[in-house]
Image 1: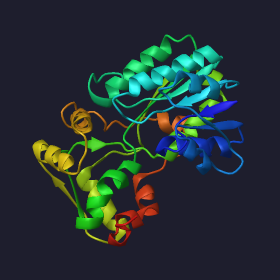
Image 2: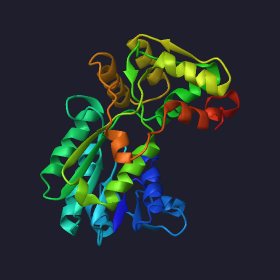
Image 3: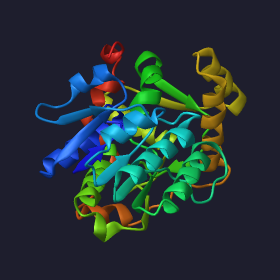
Amino acid sequence: MILVTGASGSVGREVLSAVRKAGKPVVAMYRNVEDTGTAPPGVATVFADFADLATLQKALRGIKTMFLVCSPIPQLVELESNAIDAARQTGVRHIVLNSALGAADYPKSFPSWHRQVEEKLKLSGMDYSILRPNSFMQNIAAYQGPSIRAQGAFYAAMGNAKLSFIDVRDIAEITANILGNPAAHAGKIYELNGPQAFHYAEVAAMVSKVAGRQVRFVDIPEEAQRKAMLDLGMPQWQVEALLDLQRYYTVEKKGAEITPVLEHLLGHPAIRLEQYLSENKELFRPQAAGA
């Protein structure tokens, strides 16, 4: 039996959908009892709190393969470590971990947290597969969408740094494939980059094309970006972590790499950024401002 954690999140929800599509028996785990009611029809659900070992142990009984994902919060290492401990104690054989680009070589921000979890998983005695995906295409709508809808522009201290964006649905399909045949991927770490790399001015041009309106990227000083995020009410830790991560792209010049790993694991072409933007063009138009 397969367990998908974070089943209400952006990644977990897509992984759950992909596992169901593959016809594999699956249980969806939710961190809030209320969220269990949002599960797709016919999907078995369990409630567990990553901070509560007893609820994790109960949820993991009978589970042999597990997808582990957690929100990017300061407690990530503690919470995912709890899940690994509970998995080992209840007889889980294989964990597929959703890590992050940069976990191999960036000692700051979210990648450094993921690296700590990776090391714990490697020492757990269980089989594992680790996915390190690049920035999600879906983040463009989530983080840049509000100002695009309201002002026809988005702002960041990114300069001309490029990113090879990846669609969450492709990550989910790969994850489902691994969950369905874990032995073939035991001990593997996959660096997942998108099929193309773009800087933000190019992204703005692509959004303009699909949305039918002029959209601009405005490069701003890092301090201005920090102030803007704080003014929006973002907590200090999140602002600093995001800016640290941004420097991985702008200072370290990472994130633009294009490799064949993604499409090799998919067995077909990956989703292109223009396709994602076209499918979600309403998220970049003014009438979507309340969406």
